Length: 404
Image 1 (spheres, rainbow, N blue to C red):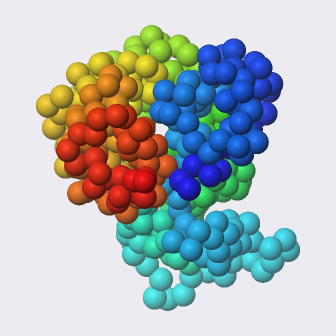
Image 2: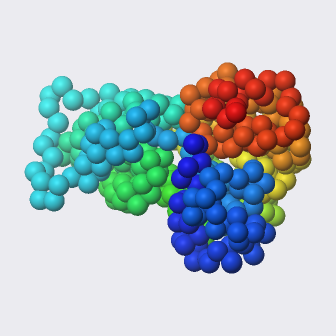
C-alpha cells in the first residue's frame, strides 16, 4: 500500500516538532482519533484535505509526510549495495590511506563533465544511475585535491564540493537527512578550499533544503537569507551565475517562511525573485547550466505555484500556472512537479475532471516517477473515492494500483 508508512512518518514528524497528539490535533484541526489511528497503523491512508491539514500542522510540506519518489531500486532496498558504497565514499574509513595524486591520463575537464551529467541524471530522477557513479566520482575528486599544482588542487576541491553536494541530495531522497548533512558539511569545507566563490552559497542552499526536510524551518530560513545577503553585498548578483545562486537562496527562504505560516512574507520574497529573474538573460552568460542553481522566470513561477497550492491558495496556483511557458533550461523534475501541483490545485477546488486531465499529462511525461510518488497516488485515491468518476480516472487508478 502506497501509504503503509504514513503512520510511522506522522509519529516521527510529530515528535520532532515536540507535539503531543492532542496538540497536533488542535494545530491541524484533525481529530485526535484519526491521528491516533494513523500512528497505530489501524488506518493506512487519509483523504487529501486531511493530509494537507496534518502537514500544515506539523509545519512541513506534504511530500515530507507522504514521501518523494524514492531513490531506490524496484526491489525496495533502502540500503542496498549501491547506497552502501555511496555512504562509504562520503565517509571514508577512519585512518584510511590518503588520496594519491591523479594519474597522467586524468582530466579535470572530464571529471567536471561527469559530475554535470550526474546532476542531469539526478534532476531526471535517475537515482540508481547516479548512485552507481558517485563513489568513483568522489574518489576521483579527492585524488584531484592531491594534485601537484595549486590551481589544480583548488579545482579539485571545487569538483569535490560539487560531487559531495550531489551525494547529499541523493541521501535526502533516500530519507537519510543526517548523512546528507554530513556530506554537505564536507562539501562546504571543500568549497572553502576552492577558488569558486559561488560554490559555498550553492551548498548552503542545499543545506537549507535539508533543514526544511527535517522541520528546522528557522534554521533553513536564517542560513538562506544570510548567504543571499552575503552574495548581494559581495556584488556576485551582477553575473548570470551569481544571480541564479542568489535567486535559488531567496526562493528557499520564501519556502521556509511559507512553511512557518508567514505566507505573505513568502509571497513578497517570491515576487522580488521573479522580478530579479528577468535580469538573468541580460547578464553575461555563465558556466555550464547543469552546475549552477536553477533560477529563471519559469522556475520562480513554478515555485510560486507550489507554495500557493501547498498553503491553501489553489485558485492562485491555477492562475499562476495558466498559460505558463517553460524555458528550455527548466529541468524535467521541475516540469513534473508543476503538473503534480496543478493536479493538486484542481483537486482542492473540487475540479475532478481538471485534475484527471493534468494527471494524464503527468503520466505521459513521467510514468515511472508518477508510479513511485505517493502524493500522485494520494490524489488519485482521493478522486477515486468520489461518487462520480470523470473520464480517464479508471485508467489512472489501475495504473497506480488504486482501483478496487
